[in-house]
Image 1: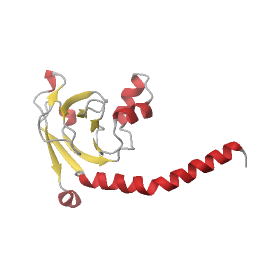
Image 2 (image 1 turned 180 degrees about the vertical axis):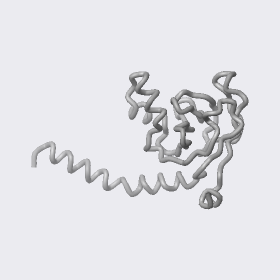
Image 3 (image 1 turned 90 degrees about the vertical axis):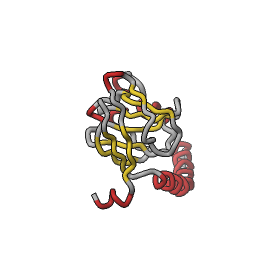
Image 4 (image 1 turned 60 degrees about the vertical axis):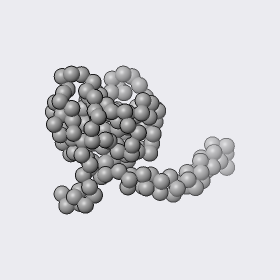
Length: 155
């Protein structure tokens, strides 16, 4: 076995050894948060709607668009800004909500990936209120409501 094969085998053994624990931890974290959230009453209409929970290892399409436009490495930037623990949420139009560990804020971003609203909060899911518009044209402020697991299974 050559050096590269040994290194690959060693990495594979490492991945297999840690994956069950990480998967369990990720699953427990995602179960703490609502599976869906509703955003309504926002002046920036594109962010109003129902959002589905997404795993923190998946990168939002709008986030990728912004990174590409800025010539940033998408994966590196997502790893830097996402804590890889909290789930994020995505609407059908690709607007998304995520927690940014760099500034300790939840962000509501439009479909383009541009930031629309922020709130300083380190909770496991987006708060209902306290949001700040990044531009006065985006007002009024959104109302964010968790949708319980029971009601999400009925819809």
